Image (cartoon, rainbow, N blue to C red; front, side, top):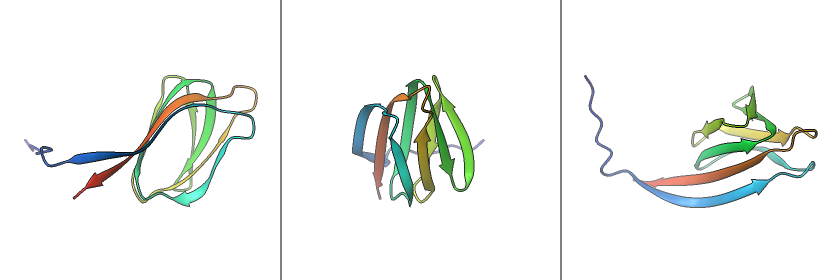
Length: 91
């Protein structure tokens, strides 16, 4: 059995938001220098993570690791509401 010691893992909140998307909302394609967690409260969005496409729906948690290529857009007839946090981890 493997045991991990997370006692030295120190996350720093880089960004936090409660977002209610508009029809124009999108995330432009980029490689992210942080870890991204998003909880979808309602609605839908299309995420492209490292060239794979995912449909995020209410109740989903999206995890995007540091260094991943991220892009997203909303679904116009079911706008997403979410909570998102971007974390940086100190060495």
